[in-house]
Image (cartoon, helix red, strand yellow):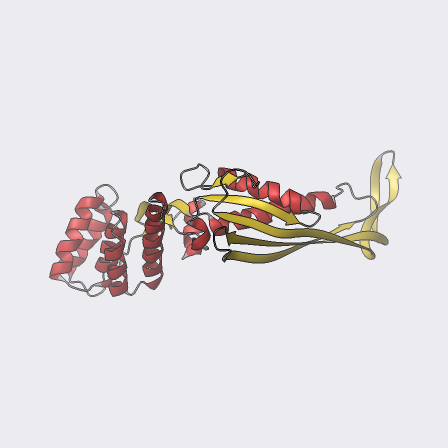
Length: 297
């Protein structure tokens, strides 16, 4: 289901002529204990690339948040002043191994002025660079020292440079990308998401008589310009034809659209839509976490 939501967030269109509900909701961070902290400090990240990762994390957390603002108060760690609720430490190190490798490359064997008239493939000795980057990040509760988060994520990239290559790739650029990727993934783990997303309505009419089927078809089309009335019609249909999965599912979307996630979860369960049950539960947790953090609990 997360994959579907990611497609929606990226603006991937639903199938042609599909009727959809567009909604907005809070989704919890993967590491909820960290996300409940109001402030976070970045302690020393050791290793040759630790400072670069520290700065990248600071930049990410400084602009990431459900409302477009920074989600955490970023605290400079020092002996004076109030401390942070949680503290980030870690290790970041890139290593480069270099070897000569043989590759087939095109070589100009016949020129006319500055124009190559004929090329042939020849064996050349090229430089192979394997960049290995490993980052380990840990977040601990400042009060009791509990470890709230720990992740080690290796990355690697292979660069091959041959004589005459017009495009020369720099290992420093590769390391900079890996540092940014590590910071992005970390922020994804600990910052909740406030997303617009799109869910397709069910249109299946199996088991309905002809009149009910036509009414249901009309109500699905109506939902795009008057969703409230369509939801009322589905409630009437559910009373007349109980437990039809398409009607139950669409009523679940009505409840989800209204922020009644408990009702949505129950309706999706009755419709046999387990992925949607999971989304409703996530939305409940995300809403409750946002309220809990707002209340300072």
